[in-house]
Amino acid sequence: MEKLTFYIVDVFAEEKYAGNQLAVIRDAAGLSDGEMQNITKEMNYSETTFILSDDQRNGGYDVRIFTPAQEVPFAGHPTLGTAYIIQQEIIKEPVEKIILNLKVGRIPVTFNYNGKEKNVLRMKQIEPTFGQIVEPEQISQVLGINASDIDERFPVQEVSTGMFFIIVPLKTLDAVKRAKVAKEKYFKLIENRQAKAILVFCPETYSKENDLNVRVFVDYYGIPEDPATGSGNGCLAGYLVKHRYFGKDQIDIRAEQGYEIARPSLIYLRAKDTEGQIDISVGGKVVMVARGELV
Image (cartoon, rainbow, N blue to C red; front, side, top):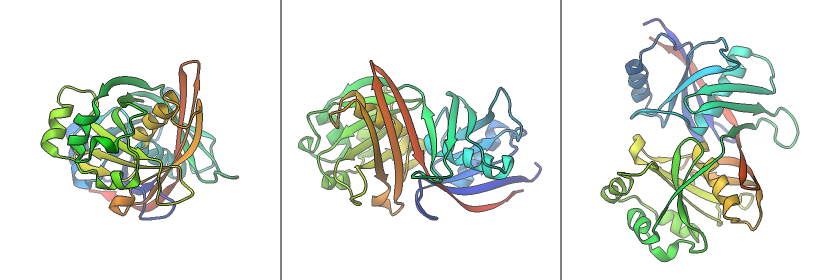
């Protein structure tokens, strides 16, 4: 195998060594599926992405996303982080938008270089799909919390914008901090469900500038807890407007994640429900950490 260039970036990070780590492999068309999977295991981040070519096809860049356990059709922080590398290292000049051709479809990523959202990348996610309702008693046993910790005004529900998550509304930050997955019950819960990941959130935050605190548990994909999850927070954004969590049919908020595992992250969420059609935008900053070669 020829030497391949790789990059390490932190995504949804306001500074280096925060947010969610991502490895990006460039010019990877010559790799087999098994080689991509083995490299991902070696990197051991929640995801690793592979840019198949420096050249565009069908108006976008072909990209594949792997977790240490398997390939996935879509994930948020790999999409933003990979778009950042394409702009910085392949195009090497400012652009307004880059299209990534992923398994889930074509995902546009926009770039902001000035103003209030300077250096924030945003991706438009596909329209959310709302799935099964989960009983509060069942999910509370999986998370090791009390059923009374769950905000009964809103459902515990499966939501997808390309990858399904179980969205769990909690009342307090204390309940979020106490959440801990009981693996046997967790794997039994997800056995016959499309959703394999669990996102819990509450309106209390560590930082007063933020609107929600979020935690995401992803044992099925080989990582116990994710420090920043663009796909999951995109599902959350759709959930919030569908169920009018803030009493409105649109949101423009900041969600914090990763504080409990010392990887503080910040995710910018926008969503609008127009007669049942929900448009979702997820944003964040990306910071370069390292570059090198695989041999």
